[in-house]
Every structure is written in structure tokens, then in C-alpha cells.
Image (cartoon, rainbow, N blue to C red; front, side, top):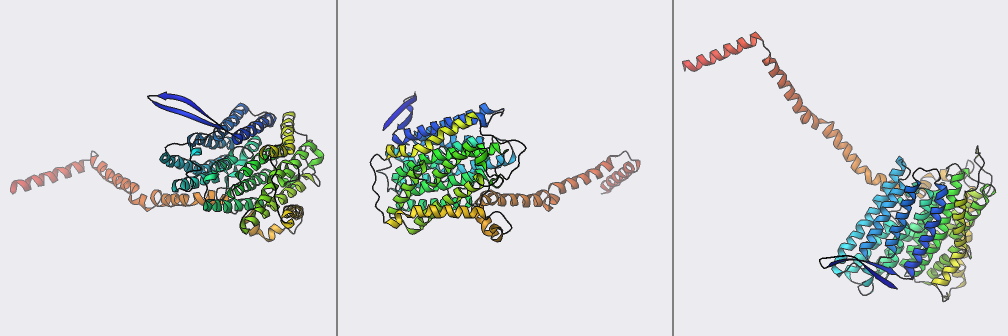
Length: 543
């Protein structure tokens, strides 16, 4: 572990020092971010071909990577805030990159959800003044258990929940799919959403028992909700976004039971196959004339063999297919979970969510790869361009070989996991049942007897992320908008206007008209005034 202090400026005896932390975790994570971002930029060279602002787009992606670097190598809360806010700002700029109303709405939802976490981090900075330094890494062990550290840990958990889109902040993650696909490949794999998980891993030694229980409960529910919602979704990008949400829940669950190193291992392997999954989805959407509905796809393995193969490799890695990248970390997590002292609710949530993951992966496989092509294009479908293919090949190799290599690096000594045979085979059983159920689900869609119509209220509840997008959009804006409408109708258009501004205006207007009438050069008026004044003068003279 290396600490590097860089003295930026010294003025009147006070120094501004930037501290960098280089250990196995930050260096490995930086390497992965650099690999994935370079392949994404290569991919976007062809994907964004013809875009007039491609230079701006590349610069935004580079700013994103620089912000992530600040976050990774900072043992100091101030410099973490630089990277954290940088990620929030650049993600907003990338989500509204296609300048239309829906992108703007999604961008506002993203940036305002993340502001909650930014405020929590600012409160951490304010509270850490009590310690005499903002370098949190010095205080994690010996201050754990104190009231100050409890509060700081709670605020860090709140910040990480907004950035990693845990319940109740989940709705911004599918909305952020309004950004171009290369951005999604970078954001959802190794940068924005994993920033919260990385912060939790760094702060995990200071978490108390009750905080871990809250974290386990919320992340388990998030994982279950995302897995369930993905089975009701027909938008290709939204399915992959919900799978990201599900995997983030898995990582945070792993941190909450004390295996932060294992969560970091899964974070790295997940970054590889999820970036590949998004790239393949981008290639499919590109060839389908920008259509994302999986119901009009089908038989793509004939038209796009390489993209389909890559999509299936990444999909199987997500399911935990043996000897692909996802297997080494997710199977390890499930077995360590089975061996740990965890309550039955968390245990059930984890294994049910794993089954749901396999379920929506097989459903996606059935819709996109099998059957006939349900869309009759006026052009011939072509495989992706060279740069897109090269970017996908790099990640394909990593998705196949990366898990084993990381296993050697992170766990050089083998772990012996002793479980009874029914627990040992439980993972395999859940995966097989989930796969069968996903295949069965995909067959229910066609025909008149649609299950989702018979159980419409249930399917709309499950398919809309438990109404979370409604709460975070209409739920937040409904009350202020209704108050604004009422105040407008009462004050600006109602009786307050009649007795207020408009009333005064009409009184003065009428008085002005009378005054104007007096001002006319009318002989009768002048004679009347003359007579009146004469009478008044006589009255005063007599008395």
C-alpha cells in the first residue's frame, strides 16, 4: 500500500495537499476501468458515426473516467467528493446527450436522485472536522463503535444507496438508459453505479451490526424487485439495466454480511460481462433500425452470428455458467452465504433473486435468438462495424478468461467451503428451475390467453418497479403543482384578483373618468363651479 502526498500549493504557512492511495484494490479497479473505457471509446467510434458532436461525446466520456479515478484513489473525503460530484454532473450531461424531452426528464431524475447522496457526503465532510482530518482511512478501525463513526457510516450508506440505485432511489437507473449505448456500457458496468459499492467496501470496517442488517434488507429487496421486474419488461436496454440493479443488490448484500473482498471480486467480474452485454445490445439495436422491443426480434443468431454469440456468452456469465467470469464470483458468494450466519429472509431473497436472474436471461435468449424474425425490414441486417466488433472481442476474451485470472489474483490460497449436499446443490437446482421457468414464461406471451391481462394489477405493479418511478416523479411533483394551480386560480384568476390588483385598477379607472369629465371645457360645468364658489363666499361673508 502506497500513500502519495502531492503538495499542490503552500500559501502563508497553510498547505493544500492532495493524497493518493495505491493499494491492490484501487490499482486493480483502475486497470479495469481503463480497459473497459478504452474498448467503449473504440466501440463508440463506429456506433456514434455521423454524429456531429462526437468529439464532445468522447471528451465527456473521458471526464467520466477522470472523475472515477479521483474516486478510486482518494483516501480523503474532499477528493472523493470531487470525483463523486464529477460523476453526477457528467452523467447528467450524457443522459441529456440526445436533446429531447424524454432525455431531459430522465436527466433531471438522475441528477436530482443523486443530489441526495451528494448532500449526505457533504454532511460526512462537515462531521469529520471533529476528527481533525478528512482522511477517513485512518479512523475506520479504531473509531468504529463510536457515535461519530455510526453517524458517518449511516450517511455513507445513504450516499451509496443513491449512487447504486437501491430502494427507494431505484427509478433513475432504467431512466438513465436515455443516454447513448456506449455510455450505458461504461456507466452500468464499472463507473457510476459501482462508485457507491466501492465507497461501501472502503468504509465497511466501520459498519455496525444494525447498519449491516438495514443494508442486507434493502439490497435484498432491490435484487428481488429488479429480477422480478426484468421478467415483465420488453425493452432490451431496460432488461439489462434491471439486471445491473439486481447485481448491485447482490454486491451490497455481500458487503452487509462481512465479505467486502468478495463483493469487490464480483464487482470486477460483473464489469466485464455487463459491458459486453450492453455492447451487444447496442449492436442489435443498431441493426434493428433503433428498435428496442424484444418481441419484434427473433432468429438473430442467423442474421448476426458474432453479436448473438457474444450476447449469449455474456448472458451465461450473468447466470453463473461454469468457468465463465460470473461463475467464479457469484457461485462463491452463494456458497459463502450458505455457510454464513444469515437469517432465512435474506437467504430466501438471495436464492429467489438468483433464480429470477436465470429466468429473465433465458427469456431474453428465447426472444432474441430463437424462432423466426418478427420484423420485416426493407434492408438487409448486417453485422456490426469493425471497431464495434473489435471492442466486443476484447471484452469477450475477458468475460471468458477474466474470472479464472482474477480468482488466482484475489484468492491465491483456495478456500474450503464445507456444506451439506442439499445446500451444495441448491445453487444448481435454483439455476435449473429458473432457466426452465424463463423458457416457460416466454411461451406465455403469444396468443389470446395472456396471463398478464388476467392479473393486470399484479403485473403492472411488478413490471413498474413497485411503482417507484411514479413516486419519484408524480409523487414528488404532484403536491407542489396542485398547490401552484390552486394559488393561481385563487390569487391570479380568482376573487383575490377582483378585490386586489384588478379591483383597485377599476376603482381608479372610474374615478379618473369622472375627473376627466370635469376637466372638459364645458360651459355648464364652469358656470356651476362659479355659482358654487359665489354661494360659498357669500356664506363666509354673512357669517
